[in-house]
Amino acid sequence: MAKLIAVVTGGAGFLGSHLCDKLLQEEMKVICIDNLLTGSTENIAHLFGNEDFSFIKHDVTNYIYVPGRIDYILHFASPASPIDYLQLPIQTLKVGSLGTHKVLGLAKEKKARFLLASTSEVYGDPNIHPQSEDYWGNVNPIGPRGVYDEAKRFAEALTMAYNRYHGVDTRIVRIFNTFGPRMRLNDGRALPAFVGQALRGEDITVFGDGNQTRSFCYVSDQIEGIYKLLMSNEIEPVNIGNPEEITINKFANEVIELTGSISKIVHKELPLDDPKVRQPDITKAKKVLGWEPKVTRSDGLKMTIDFFKKIISPV
Ligand code: UDP
View 1: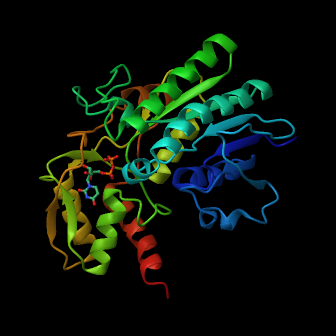
View 2: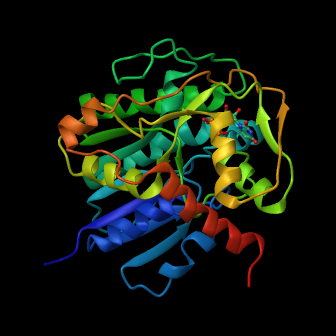
View 3: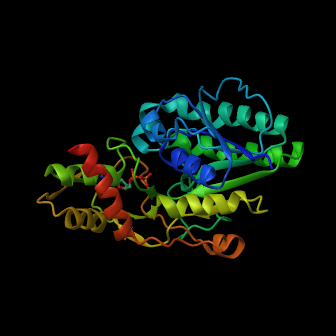
């Protein structure tokens, strides 16, 4: 039987490249599209030479041409860390709006199932805790994070419009903080920053008083949740993340402990609109997908620290 064909936009990024791996494991042919703005061919280097894998260097805000049949399209193209979207505000807005429009157009043309990578950022600095899918969020549209939050909110609206008006078969995943190998050491996120600083023996920069919380999901759990959603019949958004919540102070201390570092914590100014709390309510994912995370934060951290060690001091 002919293999199913999946397109992954942003396929050379952190999550996109792990998705390419997963879909290939599931015996699909994978076409990765990426303009390499924040992605890297290093993340997919191991896939070149696999006859089921192909790579197209392309910016999905422009018309996308892919010949032949497509069964699934997973739209993961976007800068996705606070530093990236602060430095690339227009590109972030364009890929969430124009890019999502182009990719939905491709899905409509090919009659492919479309999955949008959305984000917990649609909840903004939330007034409801933990965040469930029926919460509409508290987003500052004109703040620095607005370029990402509003682009993803628009992308969700456009996805639902293509579903309702054009009958495109769509899925929306709201991704909460996820970590693991292939994160960029300098993407400005807490985890690569802390691990890099700890391994180099530098001060660990905690923003604000460090009492803000996040809930960190290991990448293999995240990918499994996304795959289960892709294969499900759920049209409306589903949160995928690890509900175990931790303060950033405690998280920094865990990194120090697990790296055996001599680093000390220093506090820096809290970025504007930095959410005070974040924790996914995963009741829906458990019920509809039969999914919940399996990897503990400490096991995930150990695997991620090993990855960063090889980058910082390759042997
Ligand atoms: N953070 C920090 N030090 C850093 C980078 C981030 O204290 O070097 C904080 C950041 O202000 C936020 C939390 O860690 O409160 C998680 O930040 P991250 O950039 O990983 O993701 P976010 O959840 O804010 O999108």
